[in-house]
Length: 135
Figure 1 (cartoon, rainbow, N blue to C red):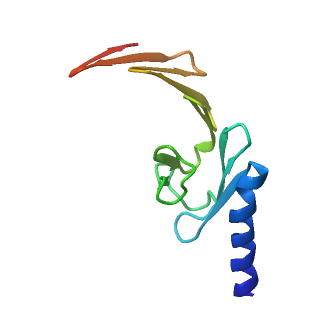
Figure 2: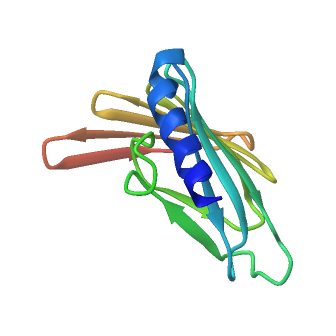
């Protein structure tokens, strides 16, 4: 059984780049239970799909996934229990889809613009050691 699993992972690791798509699946058990799938398509778009068990877990609990767990990720992300549904990373734009709406972050040089489905927005400009934020 283990040999076939290792062989399947090896074949996927070798053929993934050939077909232009890679996929990682993270299995969690314990207090935080479920499956997180990270996929990168031919165009470079990364989709993080979250399917976790919500019973008996406080809403603020969750898990951090980062490039150490999956090299497809450009940064660390907090997956909040009962909140985060998916994350889409497309170039310089990251969209986090949650149970109560979405948050989109666009990074353009030294400017970061964050908007949300509620209409809130923030623009942050970093210039040397000065940080300017507008909401």
